[in-house]
Length: 330
Image 1 (tube, rainbow, N blue to C red):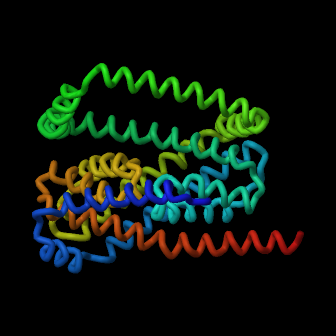
Image 2: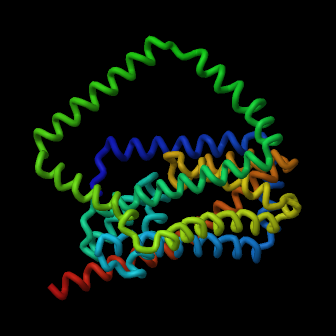
């Protein structure tokens, strides 16, 4: 990926925003006490939590491989797994680049068309969103009193204030401008890259239709459910790492996984800052202080990064080696 100055500045700004959110989350907190709590954490439970996330990555690779096989691309499990890990590694450097990164690995190692892979990734994400919505619904059904109070006190007043301050003239003007630019952009692309766009569309459509071609859709759905169960139990197991969260149950884990999932959707490298703030806010609903919530979120976020860095780097090294081997045979 070629990065020009504009792109570098964009990612730098996003990274600085993440650091800014992280600063705001920890501002006014006793950092010495937070660090003391982190140092005294039970690393056995942290290790089990990180292991659960790694199992989720394996299930994601297995699920993704099914989509390739439905398109008659005999992609190997190991190449799929390495692509997934490289994707998570790439997300630590550039937000949302992980999806492109793992598709690039599959393209280089298995010669699958790039946009067919992107189509399968979008299909995967749609199922992840469906499971997230299901999880959020379960959270609301069984904890409606806690969540509704939080939304009505902390979120709704802020949104109402922001919406009331919006000028509808400017909102409509921006909407018209976006539509006009989109239409002009599509027209320009069709004129300049007509045949290439047709090939891209065909490959994307192939990726989108991969789920419908599956012979064992129930296994795909079980993998999807398994991925989120692993995320859920990783949150739950990590509760036992520090005394302040050790009394929390599965309900708190449900809430934390929903909040953390929305945080990871933010266009910031590795969800830094946003993840910490959102998870800490989720735990305050269960009488956990913000200080302890920040200690917990720092522990779980750091454990996942420390897991992805060596495993993702190893997968990147193996994938690059695979590429060199393929070139030497040619």
